[in-house]
Length: 167
Ligand SMILES: CC(C)(COP(=O)(O)OP(=O)(O)OC[C@H]1O[C@@H](n2cnc3c(N)ncnc32)[C@H](O)[C@@H]1OP(=O)(O)O)[C@@H](O)C(=O)NCCC(=O)NCCS
Image 1 (cartoon, protein in one colour):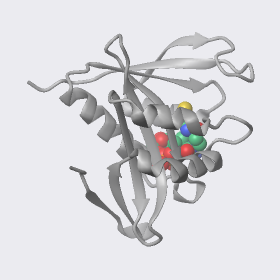
Image 2 (cartoon, rainbow, N blue to C red; image 1 turned 60 degrees about the vertical axis):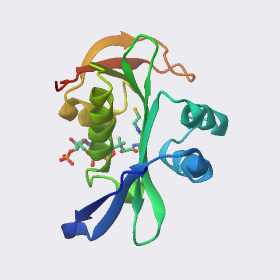
Image 3 (cartoon, rainbow, N blue to C red; image 1 turned 135 degrees about the vertical axis):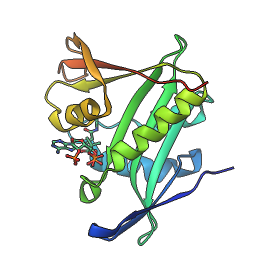
Image 4 (tube, rainbow, N blue to C red; image 1 turned 120 degrees about the vertical axis):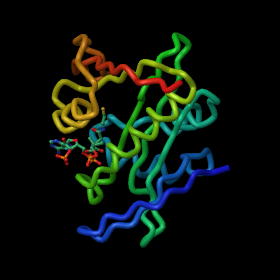
């Protein structure tokens, strides 16, 4: 059963739906990813297919109601070490700074805690200040610098957050 939650952003007149991201969304997801991640940073289409086919994946999207289009996406995977790994987050340029990334990450973390996952981790480029601010606001802290982590040779930061598991 799909969870559907209406989101109202009255000041900017945006109405969105927070929904699971499914394999049937693959093409639209890939197209949005190409707009979010420039200069060869985007995932391959087959990487998304793999992620969305994995039962340990928690994936969410926000859809714009007015245009019935995907505005944002986020994907987390429960890795074999029992840590929730946020693998990617993207928001279409025209829908940024409305809290959509924060909302999706909260939802992924909530799903992780339901599964008794107590730690989340992610990687971010050292020069991606917007994403770092987002993650810091959510409570992630840098624990390690990852030399040449990205394909183009960029360094990354490993960021970690402890999640509160409710009894
Ligand atoms: C990073 C990204 C996902 C943020 O999405 P978003 O929906 O605009 O973020 P939110 O509106 O939820 O922002 C939450 C907080 O993050 C921080 N933040 C987000 N964008 C920021 C920016 N451009 N500059 C500084 N801080 C920023 C702010 O603290 C913001 O809170 P505020 O708006 O109350 O100040 C989006 O810019 C994006 O898709 N970028 C390209 C893809 C990418 O880099 N993904 C992350 C890869 S690790």
